[in-house]
Length: 126
Image 1 (cartoon, helix red, strand yellow):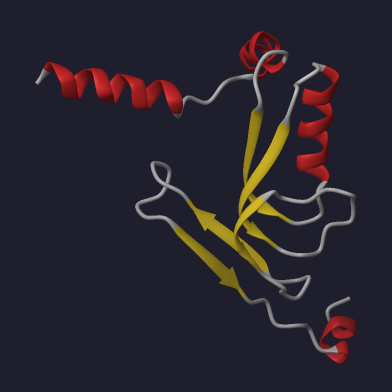
Image 2 (cartoon, helix red, strand yellow; image 1 turned 60 degrees about the horizontal axis):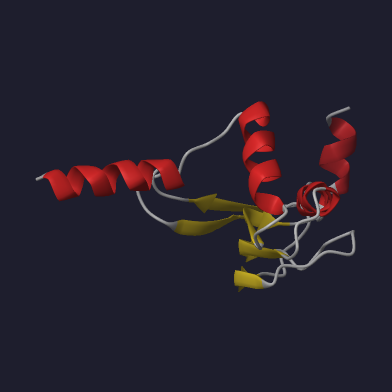
């Protein structure tokens, strides 16, 4: 099955993770001529998304859009996702975990609830 092998190779190229030097070279070559879609798992405070968008803006990307699997609706910075798989309003201590193939067995977004520590218990632990 030659066709299957070529498709597997193409899929591997698309899902490749780059180190910082490789990523800079790829972005420099592409950013000035192509729209860029930033993808992230969870948008929480906005720090990562803002830094990535700033990096691309400095390389004169003509258009930068952002897509996230989950948006926590709690950004501290002036950024937003153009597309979000789900928008969640959860307590600050709760954790949103995204499981994404091929790194995980199945695609899932999981909310991990962390109960608040009672005032007396927090003081007793000190």
